[in-house]
Image 1 (cartoon, rainbow over the protein chains, first blue to last red):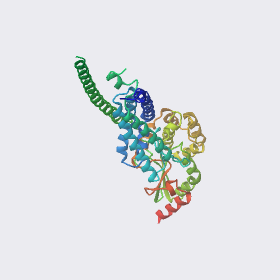
Image 2: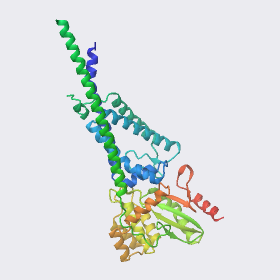
Image 3: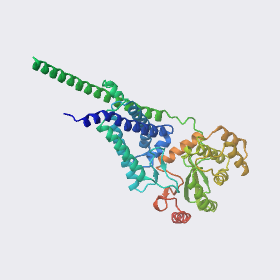
Length: 163
Length: 245
């Protein structure tokens, strides 16, 4: 028999999960929106990691902002929440790896997370630790959604006939 | 009788549960398919936007050297390439500390100094794209044989990042103060004649694997100070001496 507490938690989870879903949606929409307007700058930001040729960086820099916006919109409406949360987490892990790489190589760049990034000027300092911590927090939010994907005000809930 | 009813209720419950599970599977499958397709479509939008980007008609200033990306001073045996953005603070301080020495070396016939204007800081001028406008104006000045003069006066009046930058009118005024008053120059600045050139030159800069400004290269070899910093005047002159043999 389920205890009263378990029943209460089962009812509360969809409400709790709604928060990370909407927060992640906002993160992606802002991150993608800031980059989509200037694809040349986005390409330079990717290029600054020195992980690929400029031609490849150009493609990644163009595709990434739109992918981020799409992920944001999908999380906002709550479609296939578990899958979008897994993809979010995977992308964040890739970003963390990229920033760690830049850090280990002693590159002096802006991560380009919420901007068009690029190389830093002489006076500016890098913030790799902060950037990584922030991305780890986003991975944690995604993880919560992977674990408890059902949330309120989601298309998933509507399609499953939940009220 | 009551036992039979209980069993029937249980059976109905099992069927209902199975139906619910079936529905969950179907919904999960199709929403996942939809999500993958939509993400793919989004990526495609990015790709086509990139491919569809047309620099438009690029007017390359005929006075420019090195694949039409630079303006040269002097004709010495050692080539020194300097890539700069007119809004970049680090370029401003590089010009202050090392710019004079480089120009002297160029005048003395020791080096060929090639200035490559690039525009990577457009986002720091409140949407006026000062970096691109200034680079384009410098090309117009180069075309009139006054690149260095104009370059120097722009750095002497370098606007801080996160300001609107100098207006076109102000740049024309500054040009006049260094003896550049031609109609051709004014028309080119006001008409943005070399803006697409500035964009293309910046792309060529990135393609060379350069990411920041100022980037200095001696005989094609990028020169960095310790810890990827801007090289000091001493390091630059030393490297030039070595390259000269």
